[in-house]
Length: 278
Ligand SMILES: Nc1ncnc2c1ncn2[C@@H]1O[C@H](COP(=O)(O)OP(=O)(O)OP(=O)(O)O)[C@@H](O)[C@H]1O
Image (cartoon, rainbow, N blue to C red; front, side, top):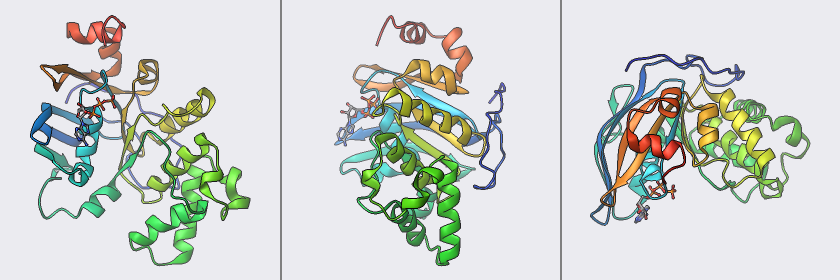
């Protein structure tokens, strides 16, 4: 991988250890990745390196396989009946698709945030306590510290500290999405996969989550699907453009987002980012 990207700001010193910077070194290496549902290919031959600590945006029209690609990275695709994935995904050099891989441990290292906020219908506290218990954090004081750190990390602590036992579903949409990000952060993941995390939010809540994503970068590697090209331009260090050819999604271009948006190499990319197609 060549080129450099600016370090994103970060302020989450109390979360996971890690290089607090976007560096042009692969955290995930993807080679010849193909995905099919019921034998029908939807994505073929994708290869790219996701740089460590950076924000990588996945862009492209609906149906070109961005969500499927994202879901393969932490093997959420294992949970979809009829879905087959071929190719290689390496996390720090280790094969994610190896039969010996503990998928629970893998998803602790690579967390996922979905398009619609999906807190459990439990209290705010239990939303964060439950994953910690499931992942074997037995000491209550440690769980409490991690819950507070995660809520502070997403800027929710001051908003909810007096009502930790209130239902999470009573929070606003934007607060619920930040709670879902906290639920991923509480497990101290290295990588966060985000599938259109702002698309169900109003503009103000969306701006807060976008700012949060910028703060999380550096400590965490972030891969985000977004249809909002202005957002991708604002926040992404790197961008990958997917397009459908003969009903199958392909990666057309990947690189530093400044280059992809301002001086794309491929005519399809140029047409899409200028709004002339897609
Ligand atoms: N569980 C599934 N079973 C069958 N087909 C699926 C499934 N999930 C996705 N697909 C199909 O795979 C293709 C790629 O879908 P995917 O959601 O990955 O694309 P996308 O680029 O993320 O689209 P969007 O931007 O609209 O979310 C689509 O044709 C979709 O209908």
